[in-house]
Length: 180
Image (tube, rainbow, N blue to C red; front, side):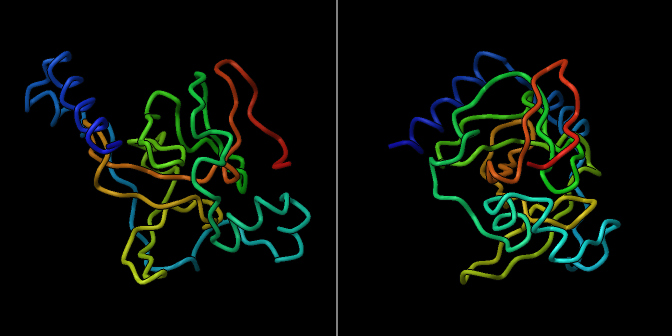
């Protein structure tokens, strides 16, 4: 039922905005895809496991460093729509904007594009008996979530992230200086 409502929402949105194919193509150019990297080995920030455990909360550590996930509909940013910027709790760099956030109905905060193409990287993930693209912080290689091809226009991507991997800063606020 949620998928039907979601699809109807996309159709209505398309009709209201009266997007043409050329406008959609232009919008996609404004949201270039992040780089796909072969593994988690070559990222600029490398910390020991002990340092990560000191820097992060237990929930952040589980998501970011152990590639865990939170239960659906349990994250603080799932139904959260304030204007601002989402930062990686690992590197404290901006990674997503509220402007690209949407309600996917999946139970996790979802975005159709990162804040810029260099904010995140993608890594092939063959865990859980599936083949997916894992979304990682571009500075630390820390796990943020996964990306799927079932999002809304203009990119048709759904960056499905874990709330505990993110730090939200309201519009006009100062960047975080600590993960905790």
